[in-house]
Structures are given as structure tokens and as C-alpha cells.
Length: 588
Image (tube, one colour):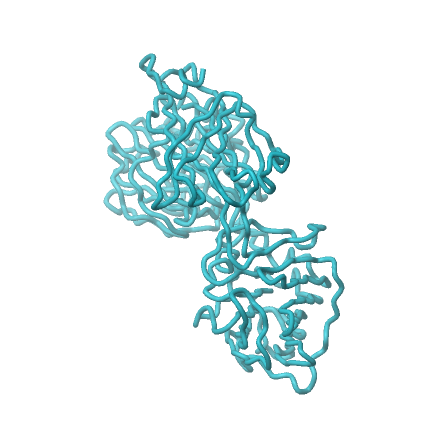
């Protein structure tokens, strides 16, 4: 079975009807670019697309999940609108929405919008799209696709995870709309239930999801067929679609960061204590130790007094142990960041996100939020040393645009480098802004994923130097006939330029603890019952590829493999480490 399948034997020519499996195609065309809140430059459709008695030859793709139609820019397209409303669908420029919501296609996620236009179809792809709900570290990635045909038919395909679910503090950003309208002030009809199928005699067709995470056509396709006037529409689930997904974690991994991100309205760490105990080469993070707020004395120094967006450096009376050695300087921003040494940026950022915390140029301790000490009645931000401790305090400081106070305090033990973050009453629902609590070593850090710091997480071990575990990813999609499909192993330890791919048919999650084999911290994620392959690793990049060509035979559709890489390492007694698992589903 393994040689027959993985050897890529072509056993027939496969002809597939268009849209048959409701799968997102794996070759989406030319990239229009990546970004957040952008309408890309005008593009040709490839034919005259008919809509409501008119035809259009050009398209304007927006990363928000919709396209505008025009003829050489007439009528003029609108902007990148992340607040979807049915009224705008009817009143604005001609628009077709695959899913109009607060969607972004960010380069950091390898996201982009693509266009493939011919004389017979025009396909728009939102690749690795993401709902804006956690700053730059948002919800799950998904693919979404829309195809226009010369008949006026519209087909949309939604990958797993497609949803409307933007930031909770901004309900207007959470709305999702799928549909089509020539716009220009047409009368808005009643909404349709697109997933249920049906027909309408109105040229405007739409469904609106007002509640977050209620979009109901993920892993499905939608067809909208013009009847002039009106539409027929139907939806069907995706079947035998090619996909890959990673699961588990490679070893040996050491993170240099941790964080929790939330809207302040959902913040649940009021009246809690986060402790970071210095170990010599990192920290142990706990939420189980007590701590007491120390009121600032009359000798406490104001921090960036009179500034809304400011920062100020303070010199410590003695060197304090930190990542990379010691420091005698702390830089405090008015936004709840305490940076080791000088400032990480000359610009004060009042829109916290996990991605920016992880990218800070300085080692940073954070309870990061848009505080405003300049409002009348607000408390102050102060710094002072008392008996070998440095205290940085937000003492009843208002959130921006509110008169609701926030009280919290960083307590640094200069002798040991330990930190106690005492969080008192915070503004909560009174503020619409976000907050990040966490820590990151200077420079770019890998994302360890958010931690619920209010839960009983036990202890988090944070290293001064990030160590990335062996990682495995797939290249492209395992579509029928894809002779170039492969996997790539990265972060291979620089020992032996050789690695192995183990192939099985069963996912093991949670993974099998391999301590009994002499591989503590490593886990098995596949039963490896099909076999194994060895592949070379570059001694320049310490990464390597294993080709897994997919036969051009429909009989393999739906086949699932679970694979995992193994490489040599000095980090375990057995001198081997394992990667995460990768699940491969062969399909269309």
C-alpha cells in the first residue's frame, strides 16, 4: 500500500465536474497581496459578468470577504469595510459577498488574496484568512473561495473554520453577510436562509449573521444561480476535500514568552497575583502564590507625568538578574509595559496585541492596556524603590475614554530578579479596549499560544533562550494528481543531516509519552503502521523535504495519513527527537 500510494503511480486520467466536491482549489492563481483592511487594485474578470440586467468587466477584491464590480472603475468601488450591514449591501456599489465580515489576510499567517481569471471563470481566493478577534493573533485560519461564471452563476466554497467572530467589544465588527446586490439604492428584500436552499424573485439575495460564530456553511459550498429576475440557491457539504493540519508539539521546545490576551470587557484577572520566580536561566510562572499591593509613598516618582502616551527610564540602585544577564535600567510606558533597559520603540502603542508583545525589541513585562493618567480624577503611574524592591504602580489610573480606574503593581525583587504582578480592580466592561498580560524576551519570539492565567495551569517554565522543537509541515495540498506534494522538517538539530518520516493511518492525540524510550518531553503522534522513509537534511538550513506524490486516481480520495518526523539530537538519552504530527487527507 505504501509504495503504491506514496510512489505516486499514475493509473488513469481523472476528469472532475466543476464544483463537484465543494473543495477550495489548491492553485488559487496570482496573489493580489496581503494585509488588513485593503481593497486591491482593479482586475479584469475575463468576461462580461451579468448581474441584474447589467454586465461588468472588472473586479475589485477586498480582504473583508467580498468583491466590488465595475466597468473600468465605474461605478467607483467602495473601501475596505469591516462593519457589514444589509443596508450597505443594497445602497453601495455592486458587490458580491462570499462572507463579508471583519476578515484579514495577513502575511504573518502566509495569508493573501488571489485571483485566477480566464474567459470561462473568475476565481477569488481568501487564503489563510483570519477573523480579527485577538489583535494580530486572531482566531483559526481558514480558506474561502468564490467563482464567477459567464452565465452569472456564483459558487462559493468555505473551508473548515470559516466564521464571523470578531472582537467581542465591537459587536458591529462581528456581523457576517453572504449575498449579492447590484446596489445603488435598490430596495432591500427580506433575508434568505442560504444553507437551507430556495429561490427568490428579487435580484438582491443575502443572509445576515448578527451573532458571532453563527455562520453555518463552513466546510460546505454555496451556489447562487440567476433566474432573471431573482435567484435559486442551494448549499451542500464539502466531500473528499484535500487538506492538511498539524497537531501536537515537537520536542525539545522551550518558550521564552507567555501571555493572555482579551478584551478588557472580558478580563478575568482582577484581584489576582501572577508570580515569576527567577531560576537563573528563565522563570517559573505561577498564579498560586499570594501577593499584597504596596501603596505608593509620598516619595514615589511620577512616570511620564502629564503624558497620555509616554515612557520614562529609571535607574535601579543595584543590578537585577534578567534574561541575558543583569540590568540597572527599567523603561516604563504609560500603557503598562516595563521593559528591561531602553525602550523597545520610540512610539507608544495603545493597541496591544500578542504578536507585538512577542516582537518587542526589549525584554518586556506587560499588563498592557490603553491607560489614561491625564484625565481629571485619574490616579497616577509611579515608580519607587523600597528595601530592595522596585515598585511600578498604576494606582487607580483610568482606561482611555472612561472614568473607571485600574489598579495594578509590578514588584521587582532586585536581588533575585523575581517579579510579582499584583492586579487589583480593573475597568472591565467600562472599557472597549484590549489588554495583554504576559512576558517576552527581547527580539522576535515564536508564539507559544495563549495561556488562561486565571485557570489552574500549575506552572509555566519560561527560558531565557527560545528553543524550537522539531517541526513538520506540509507543502501545498494533497490533491489527486499532485506529484509535487511533500512535507518539510525544520528546526532539525545540527547533529546529523538526516531525518526520518514515519507514516501511519491513526492519529494519536494526546501523544504517546516517549519517556520510556529515553525521550523525555517527546511524544508519538502516529501509529506508524504503514512504514518510514529517510530523507536528507541541509546542513545550511537544517531542514529537509520528503516528496509524497499523490497518484492521479480518484480511488485515493478520502485516504488519510498521519505522519511525524524524527531526527538525531543530543537533547535526549536516546539521542532522538520527534516533531509534531501532520494529518494528511487526500482529495480534490
